[in-house]
Amino acid sequence: MGATIRGILSVVPSNTRSIEDLASRFGRADAQRLTQMTGIEQMRVVPEGQTCGDLAEQAAASLLTKLGIAPRDVDGLVFVTQTPDYIMPATACILQDRLGLPKQSLAFDVNLGCSSYPYGLAIAYGLISAGLARRIMLLTGDTLSVWVKPEDKATFPLFGDGVAATVLESNPDGDDLLGTDLGTDGNGWANLLVAVGQCRYRSVDEFSVAAPECLRAVRHPSHISMDGNMIFAFTLREVPGIVARTLNSAGKDMEAVDYFFFHQANKFILDHLVRKIDLPPEKCPLSIARYGNTSGASPAITACHSVPNVNRDRELTAMFVGFGIGYSWGGVLARLRPGTVFPVEEL
Amino acid sequence: MTRNDALGLLESALDETTGTIAETTELESLRGWDSVGMLSVMALVDSNVGVVLHPEKIAGSVTAGDLLDLVSETSWNRRDTE
Image (cartoon, rainbow over all chains, first blue to last red; front, side):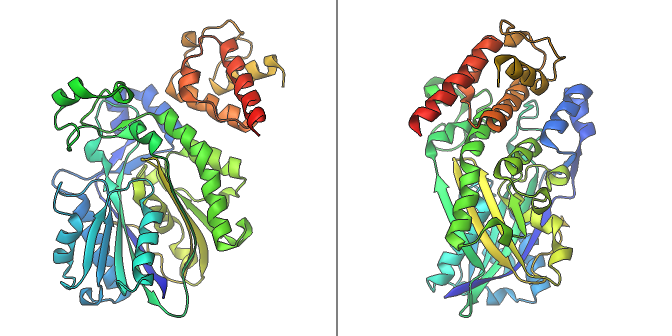
């Protein structure tokens, strides 16, 4: 059984954080230097009381309305996020109820970040191909702004919030997922993490006493800790291979791809990658200037930011590439049928 | 590429005036030598030499000369394993 991508829609908070906010916190010179490196001019962050589940509900409901699909006709919900509303239960279960999906729907969360969009597409495709669901609401995204330390120059100016909704459904006449590459190198797990708050270290005191050598450099264990240079080295090593293997699995070459939607890590990294892989920059749109690094939703947010007008009447071949925390990575080459990519919405 | 050429590229990556970095220059004394500067150096070396330097080894370099030695060593190691 094949699977069709029926639609992609992204939602970001209407609440904005700007360069001015950075300047007031870090000073204007540092704010400008950070902005020059990251390429971020503004980002969207959830206000107090708004959660990733709220963004996901809005994205899912809006996409179903646009596609003219009733909630009762969806029988699967997969939410790939690292910022669920609760430690337990899975936010997917809550969303099944809030969206009014049938009780016969499968629903579960998956804990992945930067790589979540290609992983989510592959999981939904696998469930449909195995006959376990006919129509799946895939939700991917995070509200990492909640977990950044406001004094941390490495993360506070970087992470914005957002969620992407994608509907996939069974289609006996063809596949929209043309090629896939998924991978993991858990050796890099300590370079991007929130160390405290779950079962390994339930408090900062516990962490201070028992943290292993590889976490000794973590200064804010209750918040996101990132070794940007280690992440960059990983990116340089792995991302060119993801693109090549995804193309290879589809039996396509670069010329066959209309757009490459990369995880919006930061502009410096993306510019370097585009040159390294020798891709035409016009095929690699960015959304980071407007939304920041939106974690796993960022490849889809970039598509929704960049190509709804192009896609309105034209089929596109697009690669979605995610890479980062874990380390985990994925690439999916997909057919985007006309009118399937909708503009970014706000909540 | 000569070591002098490499020093010129380093100056460019770290936003330093031409001719200000010698092999004996201590990296910590350079205004641009912070995490962003290290990122720029990694990109520079990847673009020009085709190797990815390990960030911990970059951080272990004291002088500009140490950094050039690291690039040479990493480059030769890669050739040995190819």
